[in-house]
Structure formats: structure tokens, C-alpha cells
Image 1 (cartoon, rainbow, N blue to C red):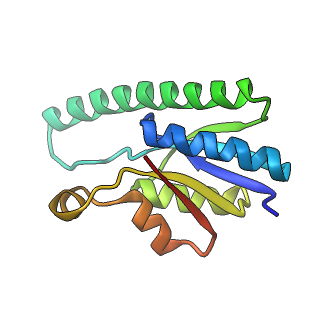
Image 2: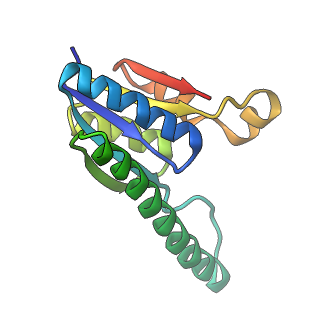
Length: 145
């Protein structure tokens, strides 16, 4: 039924639940799997040398976090005997990176975690999952903890 599953990860326990769910789906349907981590290279704006230093620090930390999350996801897939392609990508917003990656790899299902934010926290922090749901025509399996 699903030939190619895209799994965005962020290192959270909810993302790990999405990895676990994708493993089951990939085994059941013989699906290809791609796991991604999206880095927003410009999460804040500023001017001058303080901004440049802060940007370099941010990108270094974000890349380290991305590599750790991708490594953990790959380990889970490998342990389950499911082949996975992995990628760290850059996009102006995480949701945009997920939607663009789904098109790029020709995924026919996105499996992703939701942190379950609500109220003011959701309003202030936004919801990557909600934005993906709003901007793709693909089926999205949302996994919550």
C-alpha cells in the first residue's frame, strides 16, 4: 500500500515513536524509508558581528543535534532489519523542509510525531506537524506519546 515512507525526526521521544511505527509499516508493506532531520539555517534575524557569531554557534549545535537524531533513527531501523536512507536538510521552516523532502523522494506517506502542544504554547511555538498537515496532500500518520 505504501511504497515510500518519509519519517522526519528531531531527537525527541515522540519522534522515536514515529520511527517505531514506521518500522512496523515498512515491514508490513515492504516500503522504502527515508528519515530526515530539518535544520532551519536562519531561525532568527539580526545584524552585525554578534549575529554572525550567534549564527555560527547555532548552526554548529543544530548540525550536531541533527547528526545525533539521524544516527539514533538509523540504529533503530538497522536493528529491526529495515533499510533506511537518511538525510539532514536545510529549509527556512521545518514544515517546509518536510513537505519538500516528501515531494523530492516521492514519498506516499509521512509518519511523524506530535509533541501535543496546546493553547498558548502551541500559539507561541507553532506546530510543525500541523503545518505539514496543512501543506501536503499526502497522508500523514501522526504519532503521539
